[in-house]
Image 1 (cartoon, rainbow, N blue to C red):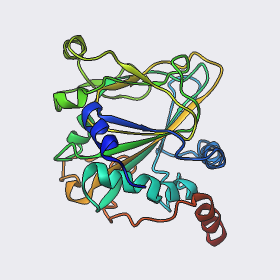
Image 2 (cartoon, rainbow, N blue to C red):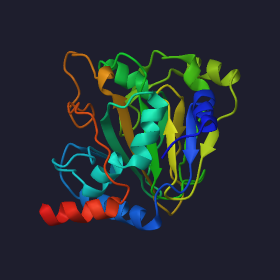
Image 3 (spheres, rainbow, N blue to C red):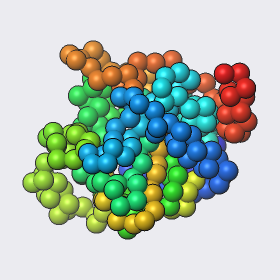
Image 4 (cartoon, rainbow, N blue to C red):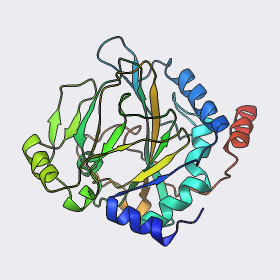
Length: 272
């Protein structure tokens, strides 16, 4: 899949690009079925909500090994329909997966993600440049009622902001300080809800300001994030690095597979 100049310009201007209908209903069903299986696994690759023990985040589904390995996500991460746009957006053919993260925002219990830049954490991981891109795959229909993602268009151009560590939610991570956030919001376009049909893909810049609200609905809102990073931008050594499932040490350049990810999934099951 080749991106048009207009699509490349949109990403450069807004910090994100929405691509509807990139995955079929059958492919989305296969992805969700595998996440149903994985969320029952007892592993530190999986983060649960503070109350109830419900799965909130699952990491490292893109590899062929490990407790959260998934054949369908392994195939999807290498499919030309994702890998080719990522290569075009980053201007580099040699990419690897920095990490995969599946956010399972369950009905009623799915909690908030505070305003943040992804690169705020990745810089602390030792990544020198914010030259990564994330492919968000919508597995359910996100709405403003069920806790969809919000972007501040163009906010990736403010550069890397000095984050602060937030421990108020089940998932503790680095957020943008409130005072700095309000300053940026005052001179930026209004945040936009990122909605669409299941199978929609959204590529976004690691410095774009984004957040999501509580799921107040009776419906789950699941999504997976596949982060692509140029091999030349692999993390430098840092003291006490985060585990491999959030900061991959597999820097082998990805080889494009097939867009028939269900066939790849079935083949993997047969040979497993």
